[in-house]
View (cartoon, rainbow, N blue to C red):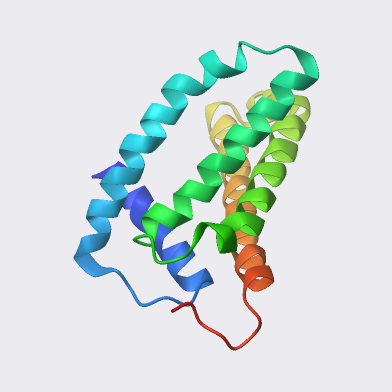
Length: 158
């Protein structure tokens, strides 16, 4: 139920960004399909990336991320938007998440240690919630900017 709650939140994000009609209960089917694909992706992705070293590994990671974020809105909105129109959003999402990942590797351990030292366990929770807020901000901004770049103002997806 929690996983479907997450997929419904992502669906609402993309439906609102692309100005589509709500999916209603049929959105659960698309959410389950996305969960299956997402689980498969995260099961296979580490093995695929491990085949490459250095820059190749980073290129493969960003490419796979781009494919994931191209597939995500496409399936969650019931395949209502063509792949080509979703490309700006996928590229924005994958690059922004790569930057957030790199920044997190540098800053997050220090932030968690500092928060834990100052506030204990609740400080760790606050630091992680702040990171989750940034993650959600990246997804929302990429969805809004991607839809804006793909659609001139005032038009809706048909």
